[in-house]
Image 1: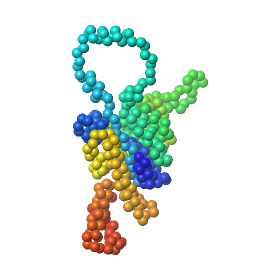
Image 2 (image 1 turned 30 degrees about the vertical axis):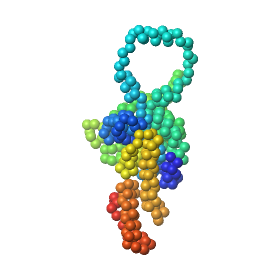
Image 3 (image 1 turned 90 degrees about the vertical axis):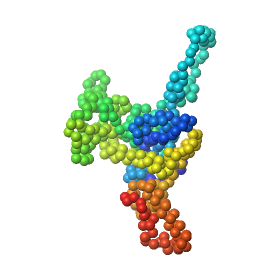
Image 4 (image 1 turned 30 degrees about the horizontal axis):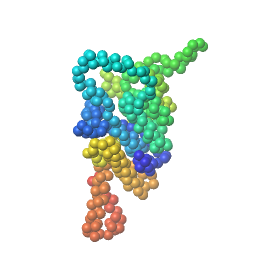
Length: 381
């Protein structure tokens, strides 16, 4: 984690706008004895499968559209499979044996209550607790200018939102289309009794109370409103994307932020930038061997996952240095691991040509077309 934090500090300037995010990825794994093997949701197949799961925390440069992984933790397996297996084993016990055990238990002295053991607490924790613990351990390594934590709709639960806000971060996430929300009452209060807080349930088919921000595309509009969310039990600013391209059915996507002062366009921009973490999973699986671990031990798996994602961070930083060489304020193109791999291969091939043909390296590398040879075969941006 220290190395990743140093790479992020060097790659993302302090003046840049950056956001944090986290997401999980399914790792296919066969066998029975691998640590953490359980049933997890596989997004590529849209169903649960048996394998491993990793939770990745990333820092994303919004302007440069690049994400860097900071922490990766393997999700531990739940105890559900063990309980199911134990319950499925039938044992024949005689009634006389049960009576003998009951009589012996009644003769035992009363035992004082004790706090729950650590194993019991761990066993009753949920995966959301595991994700929050990872964030708490990683928060000291986050950039100082980072303020917003952007996650997908899976994390839009009260336990997670409260945990993130307790770390002095603001959450940006997605709500269900049928989210239970209330309008905030802003009228005249009665002189006696409790003050009125709400002014009815939010109905998405009626947007008369919402503020229209702007039209993003033809028949695609952005609305915003500060409401009270019943499940989260807090005020949130909602950015609603309303799609009226199909007259028979209006489509609505609800994004929200716990920072009610943040404007809707920023919410949309930051949530779109969150998708960079998906590119981290894609590149790590295709190029840095994220799914190729042939080990079953937890320490070895942790080392493999960290090595894979750290190698990807170093590749991105090296590509950034290559682009910014000789430019004061470079505009970073979208990162392509395939292009970076091609440039590394071209560099090696050119070095072999220079060495085998006994050419003058200074003369070759100072030629104006040398950079064109280095970038031969890369993906056009």
